[in-house]
Image 1: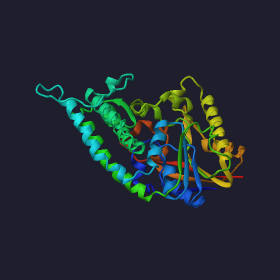
Image 2: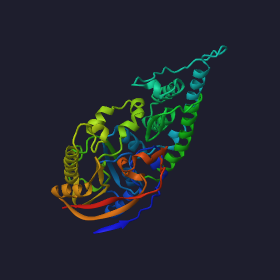
Image 3: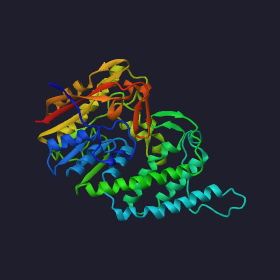
Image 4: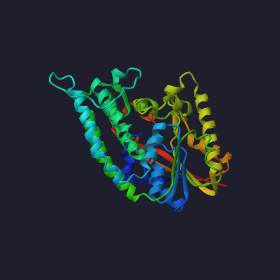
Length: 398
C-alpha cells in the first residue's frame, strides 16, 4: 500500500526551534505516532534523535524518552531542550547578563586613552585552523568573555541553558555566510553586536523554556552521545515505540556547517565523523558508489538489529526516510531499510509518502544543494518551491 499523507508543519511548541539544526522532521510526525502507538508512561526511543524532536514530543505527551545520536552537538541541544528548568533558576539571567556586559564594555574601552577599566574575568580564545579568517578580533573576544562567564555557573541546568544560547549565536558571530553556506563574508559586525545578539537570544528563549517546563510531563529523558549500531546501555525489550529518521545516504555535512560550534563548545569533530552514518560525499572521497551504498546497508542493518533487540514484541517502529542520489544514481534506501528490518524480526506494515516542499525537515542536500540558503533556522529555496517525497515506514516487531 502506498498512500500520500499530509502532516501539519506547525510545531507543537516553540521549544523545537530554539537552535538551528539541519534535517529536523516536523514535530507533527512523532506527535502523531507517539499518540497512536503508545500510552502515557511508555518509553519512546529515537536512535537518531538529532536535536531532540522525538524526545521533546514524548515529554509533552507524557511518555519517557531515550535519544541516541553520534553528534555531540545534537545530543547537547536535545538534552537541554528536553530538560525542565524553573523560573527561579532563570531569574538569575539578568544579573549574569549585566556582569557579562560590564566586561564586554571594558574590553572595548580598554584601549581608550582615558579609560581605567579592565576585564575582570580571565578568558581564553580557543585555537583552531583559520580562526582569524573566520572571526573578527572583536567577535573572538566577545565570544570568549561570554563563555568564560558561563563556565563559572555552578547550576548545571542554568549553565547549559546559557551555553545553548551561546551556541545559537556562533554562526551569527562568525564570517560564515549562513547556517548552510560555508563561505566567508565580511559581516561588518560592530562592537557589542555579539553581546547584543546573545542578550536578545537569552531573553527570548527564557520565555520559551519557562513555558515548556510548565507543559512538560514529569517523565524521564535520557540522551546518549553514542553509536546507534551498538546501544547496549539500553536493556532488551524495554522500549514501547521507536520513532526516528536515520541519516540519509549522502546527507547534510553536519560537521562542516557546525564546525565552529564544535570548537567553541570543546567538542570533538573527529569522534563524530568516526561514528557518522550516511556520510556526506566530502567524507567519502576515493570510495566507489558500491562501497558507499553497501556500507550504508550494513550500518542500517546493525542499527535495526539493536532497535529490534530493545523493542518489545508487537510494538511499532516508525522510520522517516528519503531515497538518495549517489554519484547521479538513484538509490532506493527505503526498500533497503525494510529489507534489513525484516532480517531482524520486523514485519513491514505500511509505507506512506509525504510531500516535502524544499529541503525542510530532512531532504538531503544532494537533491538541491545549489538552491539552498538558510537564514537562522528558517530554510528557503532561491529558485522555486518544488515538491519532493519522503517515506514514512511503519514496521512492527514480531
